[in-house]
Image (cartoon, rainbow, N blue to C red; front, side, top):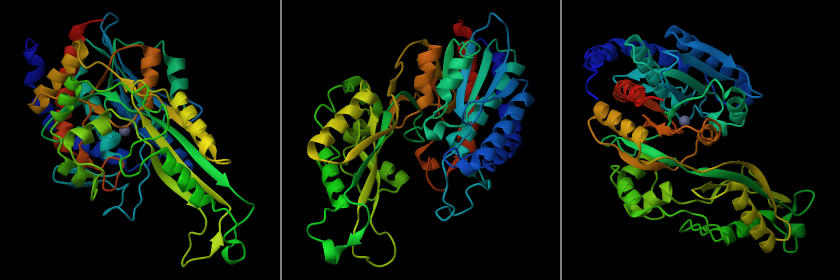
Length: 458
Ligand SMILES: [Zn+2]
């Protein structure tokens, strides 16, 4: 691979020279609150799309803002030669909401402190998108024979509801020899990680109504049913909150167990329970053994209650018997679980245990496993080692990226994950940040990967 030395002679100075531009562009991106979850931010999402289209044009790409029934997708293309291989790079430009009261600085103001960049979206996924774009510019300027498509989504954080629409309508021009997704997290800064799998998710609600209005607990308490209590009882039948173990019959039937080799690779990622707890500010865990924790995140499904509403929430204690309660729940899923089948299991189980809790399906994403080995995985591992100095560990990600499952279905090309986020970057949390170490290493890694992929041919 080292026969292209000319490409690498100038790379370090290119990266150093690009730093100011990287920071300016990241600042501009972070300061547009592209919160896809918030309907009032629709215009900001569009503004974000316009901005990054300009960025893509500025590096010589043909770029357009492609409409969907929801937020648009930004599509860019850098054309090398008709016979050269094509790589599609996926990133997303939308972000999670941010509560200004939790942050120590305003979330949508860009702050730079030495090598650290703070702001919502900096690590997820604006910083990695920008790193890949700047690497692409270098590759093109240095005649790497590779066609590059950029797909920058603006609905990733809401489960990509319109991404299938976009991919279906643009599948012809997105025909690629391989796909690169840069939206994943390492386990530890000292050890690069390449995930090859993602958990899926199935979101649903449980609702129970036992009357038409809240009533007085002195007048009706005793005979009146309490929907909050009953809902909690049903939930506790579904899973053991102490261990996390799901008690619904058949729930684990389709779970493909991680092999010994996979578990060893998870453990090689530099994971420690202590760092994990610190990164997420968790006081204690259900269990502490590193292997058990890793398996639970990377290769096992969950049952999670995200919120329960009902009854009185104001100051003091108002003695009512509520008439309605609702729980918002999701199950993270792993290969080979099927979201629709899991929903049916949950619904049937709840029906058996409660006469009138209503279970309603909300949305779902399938789980995904890609290649653990093969020429693209090998090229990715080599590029990571070249840029960060250590052989990466192959891991699975506990989260879900809906777009990945869709791209696999329609574009049918191998997908490689090269992420640049770290646990301490505050992914989906307060004080989200990114840093020049990961950005500069990322540019280097992407250039190396583009070079390798261009040689793999079509
Ligand atoms: Zn992301």
